[in-house]
Length: 329
Image (cartoon, rainbow, N blue to C red; front, side):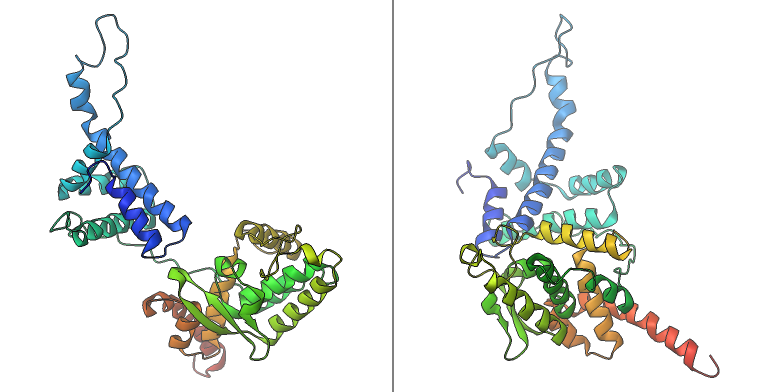
């Protein structure tokens, strides 16, 4: 091992180059590991202060700040980590009032990191393998009712190019259940209007093909017609399906801003996010009798258990229907 190269940097590069993690996800992993390293440095602070003549010099001046720790020292601390120290870190997160889901994510980051070190031959055992994940509070994803979806979709002014784009975006999100990151990555050629399907590039560069409903198809056709006839069309991004006012590929942040605008106009909860449309898609599909495996495939979930959360939402609707319909309910 080149001791001057940070193990964290090696891990992040592995996530990007070999696991095909998005830059955003890789940054989150890096931030979690940097926070853990900062915690390890803070643990050493009392001993370091004691070594600096009690912390203050004889003239009452503060002692100089400790020099930054080298990659060699950081690597050493990570490779000699003890399980009890990792447990103290989890207790520290709890004392700082981190929510359970955030603490669980940071533990998952550490587990992935140490699995990487084992695979690369730096260690033989993981010091965090025996630490239990914080028990999560059960929270069901927020879901819009069909009537609310209709109100939302009716708001964009489809006589304008950008309004038609917004209607096509919202229709596509709800019709396919794709992630907003997948939406903005769509190219025109990804939408097959002859088969009413769309090719999506999901997490880990995995591709899947999702059916797309007639409402979304018509909205896309109308938007593309306006786009082709726009006087500035020659300057638009040639491949990108959804473009901003400058003709370049739209960002996820812009999608969120547009959604906020239409939520306000429709009088809907402003905490609704683009991901809520994905939740609504899955819930409504299952309420209408869709097969769980099919919904899993359309959502691009690797694990069926991730999709099963929506059975709880659809189950509430089933119970309500039962109560209203059964003569002895």
